[in-house]
Image (cartoon, rainbow, N blue to C red; front, side):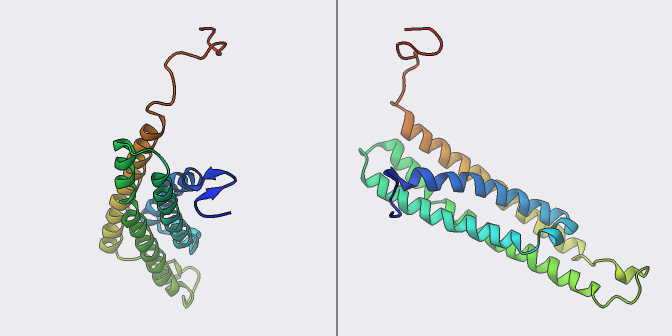
Length: 181
């Protein structure tokens, strides 16, 4: 097995599905964690780990895609898809940075609960980051999460157009399901 071909198929078409699932999932979990400190505490270190795994699949997909690009006919749609694909890495890196920031701030401010004097005391409740800091982080998470999801959509759409623009007929093949032919 290589990073270009897996079980006789171009690896790009397999790796890209991980990116298509993981980027929106990571963005969603990141935004939820940024908006809800309780959720962030429950998610814990899984958030930055998820973001790192997502980031790892981006260069795998890109590398396999570059190999595939060299093994198909030159086409403007393929070139456009490759150009768009090159822009995914910064978005995935942004998800990692923000996931680490959300995890770290949640952990930092929740650490004050261990030394709380009494169960009914206000100090016993989990502390959260200041509202201004949480608001800035939440806005950044929303912006980067939305940007990453939109970019995945644009890349996927261009890839589908490149792969299928001449690969099917509007009419069903003879004996097709819809009875035509």
